[in-house]
Length: 68
Image (cartoon, rainbow, N blue to C red):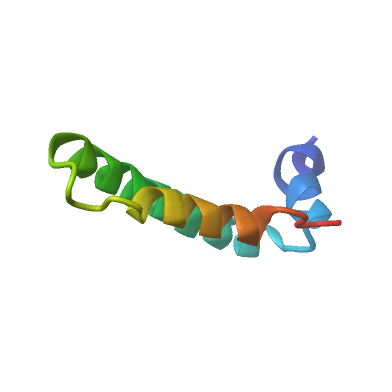
């Protein structure tokens, strides 16, 4: 049960539990920054015009095909 909950998925992307925690934590922070940029853009459209979409595209490029 412990392996299935904590270790199977990190192993599937060739990471230890702690490496995966660090990657996912950093990814979460970047998503929060992208969300903040999008929220500012919603109120003041001339600011952060492409910031959130660029950040998300960069994150997708880093995660697409992981573990394959």
